[in-house]
Amino acid sequence: MIVVPGSSNRLFAYRLSKALSADYVETEISKFPDGETHIRIPKLEKRAVVVQSLCHHPNQYLMEFVIICDALAGKGCDHIIGVLPYLAYARQDSEFTPGEAVSLLGVAKVIEDFCDEVITVDMHLHRYKKIKDVFLKGKNVSAAGLVGDCLKKKKLRNPMVIGPDEESEQWASQIASKIGCEWDIFIKKRISPEKIRLIPKKADVKGRDVVIYDDIISTGGTMAETIKVVKELGAKRVIAACTHAILAGTAQTKIFNAGAESIIATDTVPSPFSSVSAVSSVEEVII
Image 1 (cartoon, helix red, strand yellow):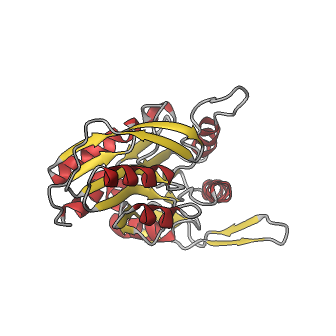
Image 2: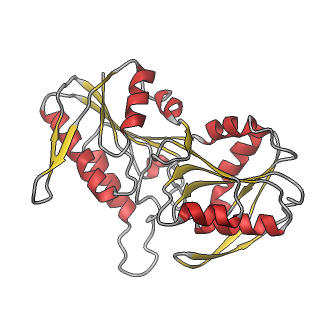
C-alpha cells in the first residue's frame, strides 16, 4: 500500500502513512503557465490511499484529487481509498433559494467516481444525516473524542461544554463525556451569511471554565458570538475548539478579541492551532 498526498495537507498524509506502515509517495505538483495542473506520481502500487483536504482552495484541491486518482487507476492501481479529512461543500446540502445547486451532491459524485472508498472526518452532516446518504462507499469518523482527550489534560475548573447551535450537539456531548462534565447547546438564528443571533438555553456558566466546540470554525462569527454570550453570563476561562480550523479572513483575531483564551483544533486543516491529530481516527477504519 502507498499513501499519496495532494498539496493541501501533506503532513496529515505523512502521519497516516506512518500509522499504516505504508510507503509515503511524495507527489510532484505544479502549474503550467496557463493555469493547468501538472502532477507526477513517482511510485505506483496496486492499493493506494489518496489524501486531500478540500480546505482554503477547494476547487483546486478537488481537481488535484481527481487527477491523482485517475492517474493511479490508469497505471494499474485496483483499489483507491480517498481520504478527505475536511470535505468542502458539505454545508451546501440543500436548495436554500430557488435555482441554487445542491453542490454537495455534485461534488460527492465526482469524488466517488474516482475512488473505491471515501473516508471523511467529522463531515458536516446536517440535512443528510448519514454518510451513506452522500457517499455509497463512505465512512465518516470523528475526531471530537481526541480533542476531548486533549482538553482533559488542561486542568479545567468546574468545566462546561457549550455547542453554539443544535447541529453541534453531537460533538459537545462527546467532548463532555471525555472531560466528565455537563454540556449544553445554544439556539442559533442566522440573520445573514456572517451575522447571527444566539439564544442561550439553560446554561449556567458563571465562574466556570467553558469549552465551546463546533465542527468547523470558518469566518469565526458563530464562535465569537458564542464566546461573547458566555462571557456576559459570567464564564471564567473560555477555550474555542473545533475539528476543522478553516479560520478564513480575520477569524483568529475575532475569536481572541471576543475573549477566548486559546483555540484548539485538529490537523484535518493545517493551522497554527492544529495541536490534535485526527490520523488515528482515520487509520482505524482503513482495512
